[in-house]
Amino acid sequence: MWKAGLIGAAVGLVLGIAGTLIMPPLCNPCAVILLTIGFGVLGARWEGAPTQQDSVATGAKTGAIAAAGSLLGEIVGAVLNGLIIGPEGAARLARQFGLPAAMDPTVYWVTNLGGNCLCGLINIALGAGFGALGGLIWHQARGRQAEPAPPEQEQIE
Image (cartoon, rainbow, N blue to C red; front, side):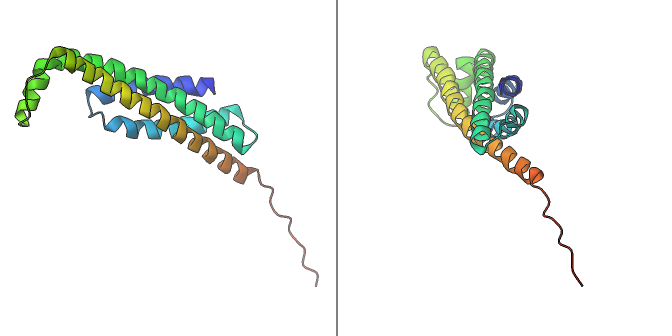
């Protein structure tokens, strides 16, 4: 679980930074969903959870760890984005959309970092849920592979 979770956290860190810098922040929850389902499957597989409950719990924990890496990536990306764009760039962008452009730098940084942290916390909750789904998917797939073949009945003539 820890191995898959930490690998997922590293991938989430990179996706979080890239998602905050390059793509709109709305793309991060989509990336977290796919990331945590995949690493939930991987965590349950590597853990070898024997029951459905164990697979779901392992997947949820692995997904939450992977999503925590995404939260760190979002924070780093928000700081970098804030340093690149800054309050003046945000005011310019607001004026282009016809919004009020007066922005205090303190308000800018609080909303920038606070909004990204809030999205990251929501992503951790989503990550745990979708990681649990990944663990369930693994358990169901493993169960289908482990089922013994039905015995063939001989026909008596």
